[in-house]
Image (cartoon, rainbow, N blue to C red; front, side, top):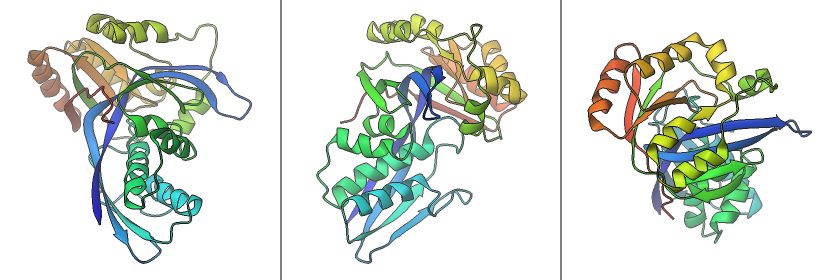
Length: 288
């Protein structure tokens, strides 16, 4: 038996960090939405009691360091599954880019193995298991558009925003989320996004308001540490995007627009100095 599952990337429309918690994690408020840039996870049942993993991108680990492997191992041990699985990841989402590629792969693996191994888990149960693997995994289990709070694992569904184009530009660097959070200083001067205003803009499908409310406190670290990211953000603004923001801890910066004529200008302008540029649509709605 084989299954093929889509693992879409996400972008942050807002990312706010409120404070550092006693458990070492940061308390966050994030509005996230899925986009039509996706890895594909292919799962095949193995009679041998092993987990095998392979990936189209040679630099992605195919052992215990891989989140999809960790997801399979966790389910196997938790539910005492005596069958194995072969996992193949067709990688399209750039790695260490702030787009939750690894988390989405893990979420797709959990959903796929729920079917393949006939575990009978609900979406909420799968999201809860995902939270043990990483803060973005629960959101990726649900997909769509949502408010994430706590350390990112508490998910509140939101309606989809109005349709728009997303133009992503990733400079040729990787950014460590842990390092960015480690250098973040929350002070009185910190400019916080207004999460409630963003939720209202999405709910009323007010695209202009969505572009005005984009915000990410982690930019205060990443843009300073990595001048390439700041340069891309400035260039995108110059090319006439309706809204511009860094996703997650970076380094990917995205532009959003509803005007197809601007898409080509943004894409062509960015391709001039950045190799990894993608044009996709906002998905925004849960598939399940």
